[in-house]
Image (cartoon, rainbow, N blue to C red):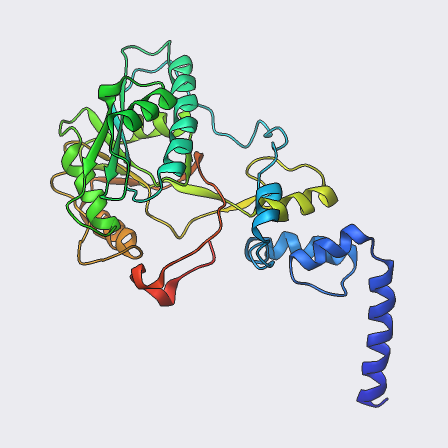
Length: 334
């Protein structure tokens, strides 16, 4: 049989197969950039390659973004997914600073503090039976373009359910955001004793009570916590898949992936912040976290690296300035 005949037959059967697909199945196919596959094949491909393929669909326009890009409430998390926590144990640390290196993102910062406030209240409720209390502060970098007013700080304090004096603004002397420099300013501003913890998180993270607990219990002098965060896929893609497969729980591979390749979020003891700084030769952002992690690994007493169920990277559109990215060849879609 000639190649031409084979090609014609393949085209014929593919067209017939495609016509048998429902409109929804075709939408799912399009969302993962596969054409002319059966519904079962779409499901199989999604399970095997969804982490990468969920990121390939075309970006919706602004109108669609406003309507579609909200992650729906997930299904209930199976009881065997989340590791148990003994909230009654006393904490080895009594202070924690949530450090946020950020510039030019005041709107996102308000949302970050809103989520943080809910988590702080939940943490306090869950840890009521533990011996002693924990003081929580939020420490945020401020650049020339940012709102550094007392009114804005008051608003953040109210969102986070914190007293005003527990929300600290740290002024940057640099005109342009460099993540390594910004984090080092947070190291300089935090408490420097053995019972204090500095947790570095980006503004597009949702911080939950488990992360606060883990940072307080894992970290000590010479002991570091580098959590593996869960990164959400684009909500409009997730909604298409869940219409086909049913509602998925929060940490389903259809909703996102664990960022085993990222080291940008970490918790460090106050006793170590002066001895461990990020390399400021990394300008902009990118690469500074990996270099820091590798350096810590060589000298730390212990480095804990595990999945953190209460540190979730929210999906957002990416508009990356490659001039500010340290290693453009390593830029990833997520």
